[in-house]
Every structure is written in structure tokens, then in C-alpha cells.
Amino acid sequence: MTAKRVLTYSVLIVGFGAAGYLLYHTFREYSLSDVIGSVKEIPARNLATALVFAFCSYFCLTGFDWVGVRYVKNDLAYPKISLASFIALSIGQSVGLAGLSSGALRYRYYAHWGLSAEDVAKIVLLSGVTVGIGLGTLCGIVMILNPSDAAKVLRLSEGTVTAAGVACVAFSVAYLGLAAFVRTPLRIRSWTFQMPTLRLAVAQLIVGTVNFAFVSACLRDVMAVGSDVTFLKAATAFSMANVAILVTHAPGGLGVLEATVRHVMGDQASIGSLVAFRVIYFFIPFFIGLPLALIAEATFGARKARAGASASPG
Image (tube, rainbow, N blue to C red; front, side, top):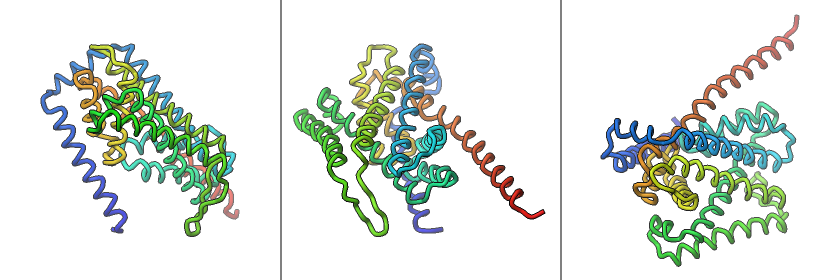
């Protein structure tokens, strides 16, 4: 076993261990009947709208890949981009280490459609930048508009949190400035990286921020049961949870998301709402993406077999 695999498995083991501890610590006072009863309290209308927001988020995520494919100057059709993006992210976001797992899946599809390994690496890299820009912008907005809740999570003064929020928004604006004026390629060994055009950078900012806003809306709808939960508070809880998830690399944010959201929302984040959110945003897409991946693999294999048969003599 290579050192890279050992490191990957070690991170996964630590991630699952930390996730298990956080889940136990957060929900140890609840029984299975409590969980089921709490989920049943969520109105069907809220669950339906949460599903719609989850769909909108995954639609935005296909935009991450669309920007990346256009960045490498490829005209691959959107249906293929959306297929690769959904399969990669619906699986990658659930199993953890999304950058590696979804990157490997993306390579499988994009390479099949003629993109080089360097192109796929750039697509994955730019998608990661879009995640950072979108999350950073949303974090900046909620830290400016709702510094009290963010300060409670970060254990900082409200003034410091507000300043950090302004810095996050300023960073996004600076990124757009670099995209507008810096055209000199950045070279790292044999790899060449270049800032995207301003048009693509603006698309990154918009689709990245709107994506996280949709996920926050999904979370807000499953929590708005016993009391009125504002979108701003839900967005604060979700954005802070995602910062923690990026730091811990817990698989699918398991445990980290629940613990952080509970810390911000208190009793408004019922066990049922958190379970419903995980099912809607992670489990349902995963169980759609997995069979799609198997169907795609079978299709690729059949096409390869037909191509081989037609190329053989006789």
C-alpha cells in the first residue's frame, strides 16, 4: 500500500471517529423514537420546499463544473457536464474528502469525453476556488449582518467578527480585480495556471454564493417547525458549519455540521430537522448518483466493447 493511500485511509478513519464522537455528544440524550417523532413533526410542505432548494443547490453545483470546463477552453455540452458534476458531487460530498473523491470521478468522465489530465486537474482546482469564493462571500455577508451568532461559534468579539466579514467580502472583490487585470500565467513546475476571465470569475462568485444560499434555505425550511427561523440565522449556522467541515474533513460533514448548527440554533435545531436535512441534501442525492454512476459505467463499457468489435478484422 502506498503512502498516499495510507494517509487517505488514516484521514478517513480519524474523520469517522471524530464524526462518531460529535454525533454521540450532540444527540446522546435522544432515543430512536425521539428521532422518528421529531422527523414526523416536520410538515410535508417544509420537506417539499427543502427538496426544491436541495435540487437548486445541485443545479448550481453543475455550474461549478461548467465554469471549469469553459476555463480550459473546452466546448463540452452542458448535459455531459451536469452528469459528471452530479455523480461526482452527490457521491463525493457523502463519502468525505470531496476534493479527492469527486476529482477522481470527474477524471473518469471527462477523460472519457476527451479532456486531458491537466484539464481535469484545472477543472477540479477551479471548482475548489468557486467553493472558497462562494463560502467566503456568504460567510462575509452573515458575519457583517449577524455578528452575534457568528461570534458565539468563533468565540471572538462581535467587532472582530464584523471586521473578518468585511475582509471576506473584500477578498472576493479582490479576486474579481485579479481576474480583470492579471493575465500573466502562473507556472508551477510543468503546470501552467492562469486567472479566469472576469466573466468566468463573476460567474464563480454568483454561482458559488447562490449555491450556499440555497443549502441554507434548505436547512432553514426543515428547522422552521416549532418557531420562526430566519434565513439569516440558518445561513450563519450553515456557513460556520462549513468552515468547520473544511477544517476537519469529516465525511459529509458528519457530526460537525450537526454540532455546529445545534450550537448556533440551540433548541430550534431539533434532532428531526438535522436528520431530515442530512437525508434530503446528502442521502437522497447519493442514492440517485450511485446507480447513475453504475449505469454510466455500463454504458461506457458497452461502447468500448462495440468500438473494439468494429475495429477488429473480419
